[in-house]
Image 1 (cartoon, rainbow, N blue to C red):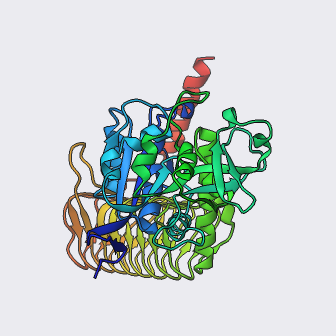
Image 2: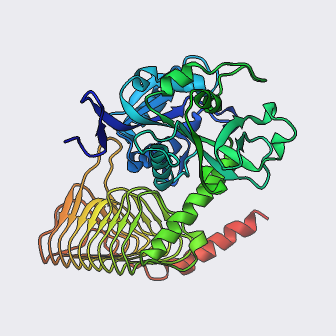
Length: 472
């Protein structure tokens, strides 16, 4: 019996189903950035990471990533996003077929299908990759074991200028892919365009790729030329369809913004379909991994950074920013709240306007309602943190922790100098600077004693008025 996703060959050797080769060697000069194109981010993660996750979900058994020379940063991102991915270097940029052949070693292994994808098309869904793979395996009417030689992903472009054209026969079989610069006037009238992504018969992929020549306007080795090579070898070639917006290639910052807008549209729709209420969806921005439970209410102008999980019944008021935070059931935050990495809010906790929380646990039912900073701290259940309270956690070299017990009350405008503990049920008087531990149920007052001097203001005004008159 063979493993799931694999087939047995005639000689008994186990064949893996799919190798995905991700081309990520482009520098992206039109991005006007020192950051390589594949590492530019949408929805909180790199375009390369989006693509790697999609092909993994589509069923790729192995992944090979082709990077440019000296691009250890791209290689590191690939391995982080897809542990086990093999890295290959394209030393010269001589076209897409040349780039695929940089992964020659991976191609020589026994894969049923080779998927060729691009790191700068981050919006392609796993379902589309899976459909491309399945169509390659099933072919068009022939035995499933044979499948198609090549399946190219195509889309209908309102303005096909600049795109390669998919040329077909009367039955819809793919005859050739013609680059725009090499197309005849008649071929340029074709609206069916090449998205660049392709599935190849793994048994013949290396042979066909090695047969690609550079007899074209750019003197490059074009991946689309494998279609005609495969047909000459007797293989059938087909087309799988996709929406134009899904196969958007990102080559500059304007297209990067388009990709961000599209993925945000998807994420907002998914959140609402899962039961979250977005009062003004177009003003809410998600990260790829944001998790909202049913019944969450998100008011306008809220930004979710990476690593946010929100339980049911939470209300997030306007103009709040969350990153690396966990919110339990019934929490309310904002408006204008900032939750930084490590913020954990217990059930029913409240974080109000202009409050910042960082690396802190806010206990069940605790309140931090106004103008406060709570960092590197543990706040007990039902504790009340008054307006303007600060946990002073940093001495210029190291961070220290503040611990506040359950039911404690910290008066407004108090500073807690960490490391320090305030016991359960204790009170800290407003305006205090607390430098020592406070016992449970005690009152701590740490401020200068008030002194009133009768008549001082009258004498001061008289003196200052005389000085002012003398200077005129």
